[in-house]
Length: 65
Image (cartoon, rainbow, N blue to C red; front, side):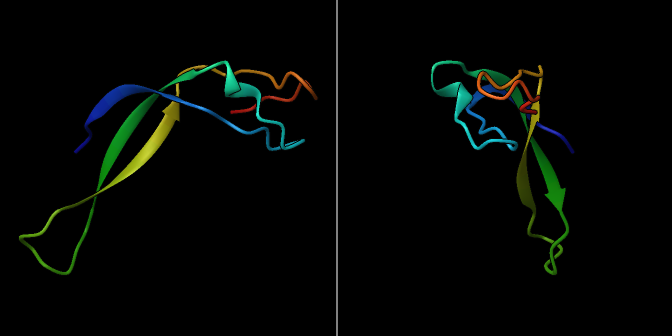
């Protein structure tokens, strides 16, 4: 089961560690994935983030997502 809502997420560059998104918010989908639990009546959802666009780092020009 997937539930999604649009949010903004700030990303850190994996190449140089620079925070590019202090002034730039990246639109994402927050998706809740159902996780199995030992109790059959209990449902657990894990949030996952899916970026909707790819941006480049302002410092090293590498893709941030």
